[in-house]
Amino acid sequence: MKTRIGLISDTHGLLRPEALAFLQGSDFIVHAGDIGDPAILHALEAIAPLTVVRGNNDQAPWAAEIRETEWLDAGGISLYAIHDLSLLDIDPAAAGLQVVVSGHSHQPRIERRDGVLYVNPGSPGRRRFRLPISIGELIVAGGTVDARTVELA
Image 1 (cartoon, rainbow, N blue to C red):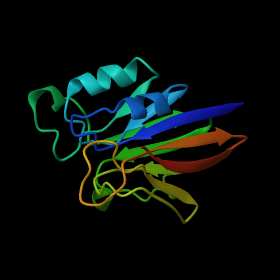
Image 2 (image 1 turned 45 degrees about the vertical axis):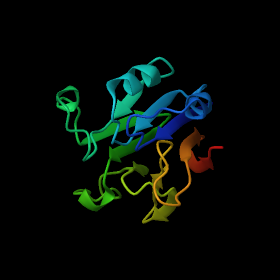
Image 3 (image 1 turned 30 degrees about the horizontal axis):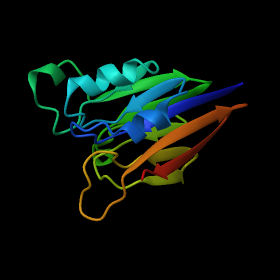
Image 4 (image 1 turned 90 degrees about the vertical axis):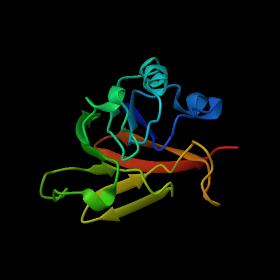
């Protein structure tokens, strides 16, 4: 059985139709912060169970209850979500995590370190500098997890 975890970050108040279309069919969704508008969370929750963390720009009263880090156990893996990877204050490998999802930089990135998969889906929000408009996903099957990021049109 496969589990699909949609990854999104740094929407900054803009949820593009292409991002919503990409996330359809996800079993879970992780938003790694800088949401910008609570309506985005409602739209994502309508697709799949949502895990969300607060980003440095999520300072409005509606975001006060959102935690800065979250754990998600899904499809047989443990995932840790944090907005800014530079603020990571745990050893993911020692904690038994398979995946760390972050945002903040708007730069899509997939990297394995010490057996842990680090994924930043980039940003499908407003374009920042010359960075791509992107989103990501994890596919979990048979105890393995693979990641990809996709540039949206």
